[in-house]
Image 1 (cartoon, helix red, strand yellow):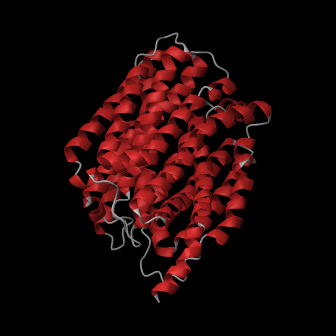
Image 2 (tube, helix red, strand yellow; image 1 turned 90 degrees about the vertical axis):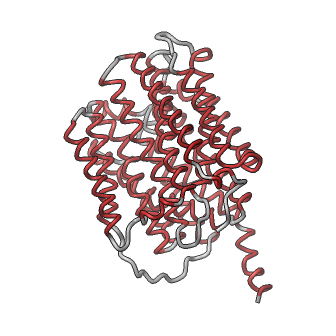
Image 3 (cartoon, rainbow, N blue to C red; image 1 turned 120 degrees about the vertical axis):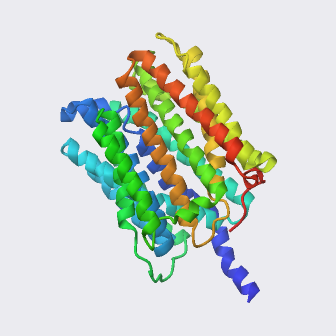
Length: 460
């Protein structure tokens, strides 16, 4: 029987590399759509005669809805099947991308972006938990997540490059249209590489009120910060407090509050919020600084991120070896130190700066910190996952990553628009981000348990 089990498992093991590539491809598209709209926003605004405030929802609406529903996506993944939910998420993402590319007005475009976020909320935790279960060995899992993270992070940078190229040479609608054929390819190939989930008997109710509160709360907070509406900020806080109450009382919560008593995961997710907030701040502000201050055009600004991409890929490539050598905790600290160094350099940006001297060193530091820090924290967030909670753990990690980034961007907008203007606002935002990273490092040093320093994470 043991020999038969090994023989049955061998074909799946042989297909793991191809399956990892497929899962990474869709995650690349998901990550790409976080940044692909930035350079195209002026063209979108001109076509729809939309103000800047309204256009900001094309960016934040996608990440907020995706982040808010990721916990529900992780729970649905555990209950209904990983491959099944990955396919559903990919299909929704493809349809929403087509709707965004064909949108006749701004409200339809924003609605399509919300739907893209919902597709991500199903596909991303399913993909991450599939990887965790395909690679149960800690060292192999770290390498597989490194590949997945590298391709995903590459999508963030590729989004800026493609946005400039497609907007200048074709039309802004193509930044969404390119998703459609690739997502269809994922839908067609996935059943050939991943085994079916088998029948599932759902014995639990889905926590839809919790998912609604977790989505509406951050949306209200961001709206309040961006539009300087205190009532919306208060409403957002109350909605998030309501989410905690619902999770504590419902019989079938999205994630049982006891889940957060696992200290390794709790610390990893808390630090991820602060790191993601700093990274989103740096990425967005650098895009603006290069165009508004240095004087780069859209395409030139996109190409300026090539060193960022190279540093990011190099950092991700060496991170699995760092984890093996010094453990998750110290690897995450290395990432935080690199990020802090980059932010400190950018916090001194001059009013009339140059790319090579004033932007590039800080950009490389932030990229290295992103590659090392997020990958180490991602591994820590999956510490000790099992068949029953791999989807939930993945959903929590992706949710705090995206919501942290979206809320960080909202604070950025408030810092730049609500206080100082021009480059002074940029420096203020970078300084705030640096303070957040310092707080994250202190939290990791003081609160992280011994397991975070272990070499790798335990297998499920």
